[in-house]
Image (cartoon, rainbow, N blue to C red; front, side, top):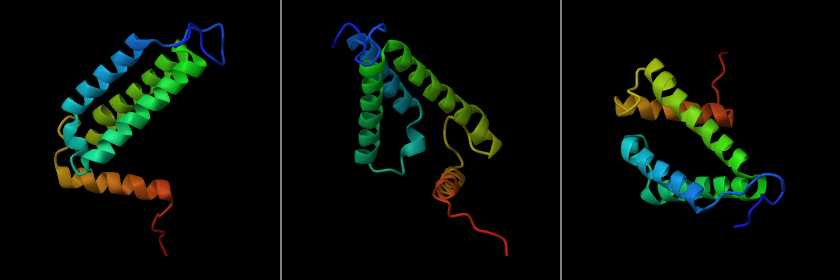
Length: 122
């Protein structure tokens, strides 16, 4: 990897230590929060992890270390909000995803809202 970011030459690029930090974080996150994705096939979980890692590396190489850690910080804050506030607000344990059926219902509702499949009152 180069010394500076490709698009913003004044910023330092990421290195293998930065990538290793992300990989260790992903491993720890998967161990702690495995219950939240046990309904997905293993290939989809692994594919998602590679996509996240690829996006972070791309940001780090092109925009620099500051943007790399900024994006990592934003996604981490989002995860913290999701697991400590949003899930408990809906009666789901933020660490264990219990009750699991309610968790599955909640994420299904979230997906339907994103797709615009809201049911409208008549």
